[in-house]
Every structure is written in C-alpha cells, then in structure tokens.
Image 1 (tube, rainbow, N blue to C red):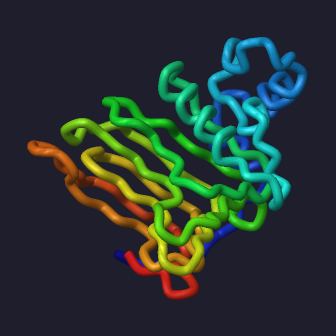
Image 2 (image 1 turned 30 degrees about the vertical axis):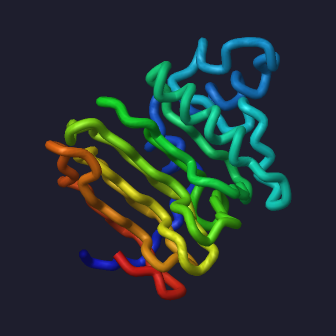
Length: 199
C-alpha cells in the first residue's frame, strides 16, 4: 500500500465532497430541537446531534456510538464537525449489508482520540463481504500506542481517504471474521501513517 502525503482540503472542497447541501443541512441540524428526529430533514447527522462534545475532555463514546447506530438504521452519513472526540471503547458499525459513511472536516480539525490501548478505535463489521461503497475521510485517528485504528471484518469496497493515523500499533486491520465472510476492495488513498502505525 502506498503512503501519500496528506492534503488538508479547504472547507469549500470538503463541503462539495459531502453532497448534497452539507452547508445548508448543517445549519438546519443546529436548529433542530433535541427531541426531534435529527435525520428527518438531512442526508446526514452530526455527532453533536447525539450529544458529542468534541472538546477533547468529554468521553464521547456513547454519543458517537448512538450516532453510528442511528445512521446505520436510517441510511444516513455521519459528519463530525471540527473537534477532538475522545473515546474509551470501540466504535462499532454493526454487522449489516450497509455501511455508514463517516466524514470529518480535515485531519487537523476532526480528531478521534482513543484512551483505550487494548481495543480498536473503529470496527466495521459486515455479514459475508457485501460491497457497500463506503467512505471514511478527512479524519485523524489517534491511538494509545498499542491499539488498532480501524478494523474491517467481512465488508468490502470501502475507501479510506485523506485520513491521518497516529500512535497506533496498526492503522488498518483487514480480516475475515465469520465462516464464508471475506474482506476485499478496501483502499487507503492520500492517507498518512505516523508514529509507528503500520498497515
């Protein structure tokens, strides 16, 4: 796998890539009452819709997991606005024929930092290797020295791009987890692997 220099996109480039109408939907999301369905009027939700603070202090594990579960059930993407999201346990995209696309605002702006050195930061679980056309982009995944950043099991056709991997023993772990499952066509493009991260 080729390691390429990370390019931090401009906000305009990023918003264009997150079509449709991310800027308008972000404003709409901020105006939605907490009791309302955060995805009723948008193709994506934000971590903040589910209580994630992204302040570098709060444990955002439960909020981000709730957001992932909601996105999977309701066919939405997850947009993580600028912030440092601390997690103490693995964020899991549960076994499904679908994928949750996860977008940040750039590797210098959206950071998911694990405080748990023994578990993956994010785990993507498929069923028997369905092709999901998934995307994870513009996020820094920072570990606690010995953990895996992203683990993918039995799900295919995912592009991970413009991401930064720091302080993990393994950046990307791809494997088969169930009988008859397979994991392939996973691409890492324009990513940076630093501080001892391997693929």
